[in-house]
Image: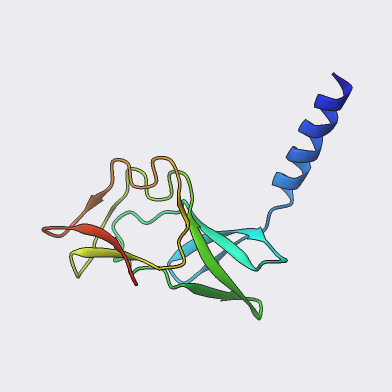
Length: 116
C-alpha cells in the first residue's frame, strides 16, 4: 500500500506541475520540456473561426512540436472552419478520446485530414 500511495502522490505532483499556455487560438499542455513537445488541449473555441494548429508553437522563446490533440479538446464545440477541411499537422501522433465528439463545424462537407 505504501508503494501505491507514493506512486499516486508522485503522479499527482507531476500533473500539478504541468505547464499550460495559450498561443494564438489554442491552449497547450507541455508534455515534455526535454523533447519540447506539447498537446493541444480543451479551450473555449465555441463560435470562433478556428484555423489548424501548426506543427510547432513558440512560447516564451522556446519552440515546441505539437504531437497530440488532447482528450476532449474540441468536445461539443461549435466553431467555423472556412475551408471545409480541418487539417491536422503531420506531427500529430495521438488524438485523444472524444477529441472531436459532438463537435459541430459550421461548413459543408467537412473532413478531418493530416497534412503530409
